[in-house]
Length: 158
Length: 158
DNA sequence: TTGATATCATTTGCATACGAATGAATTTGA
DNA sequence: TCAAATTCATTCGTATGCAAATGATATCAA
Image 1: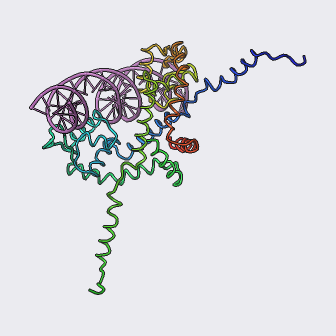
Image 2: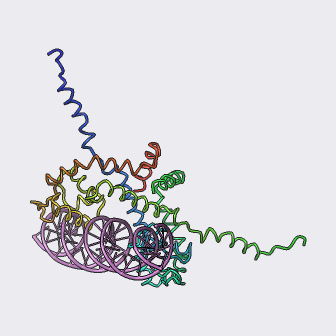
Image 3: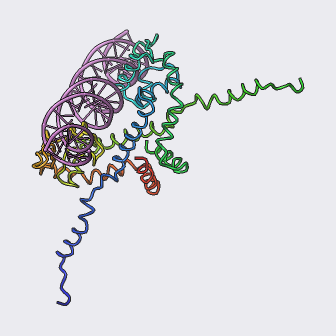
């Protein structure tokens, strides 16, 4: 058989077939959201291996309180990227363990002030060096140069 | 006053003071875990804005089932980085909505096979283009070049 | 001043996420 | 072969994480 006429139909069919892999071929493992979730999971796991009795959000609350001192619950939440409902649970648990204490704002009666207790302060100061190790271990798969680039780009995303 | 004797005590004191900022100055906002958590939060929020009736883990389960076909619940879990307890909840909810169906493995009676229903398959195929948009929007703060670098480094971390 | 808005906190409901314990079924190895 | 170890799935308990509704208080504006 020699040359055969190529109809518009054939061309269309060919194009559709060529598009098909692009259309259906969705690689979950390459999507940023999926990998972000896995990287976060890995970090939480490293954190737990070093600090067994606090979660990352709990430590974040303590570290931020250590940094800024007394604040309202909501204000603290916005400093550590937690909504009101979430921060309440975290603070409740820290309070139950004696690491923070709560008091009412004298002037604005809506506000609930949060403070580190002496024990909470000791805990943060003891844990900060360990937290640095956790950061290091999390970034360990990257060279120093790569880690610096990664942190810059990650910050742009967050 | 002219030159004063400098004791070993003074030098030590000076060193301790110099270390202090390094010791206590822990910048939560610069720690990889904290930013990773925020980046993940942002992604979930973008996802929810585009796909209101499924969560990222639910979509991950559907997309992976679409990719690999029938698998056991645990196997699916390992493919999408979910432990057995978590994947069970996700699959239960997808089943309740008619997007997946379950059956027993003929040979290995321990296994629970998971499959897309016709409705589930339609849903995934409809959503995949939207999921691509979500990936794009998540990476939008980065240039194409930066995004490529970021994905390479993120994959190393996860 | 007072009525509308906004802010702070709480509660409820739902959805991951994971450790630990348990039970059923399968595989391994002595 | 058969006891030990492993795998698959379920359940329980605890901890984020967020939307939505609610109540109390504060601020703003007409």
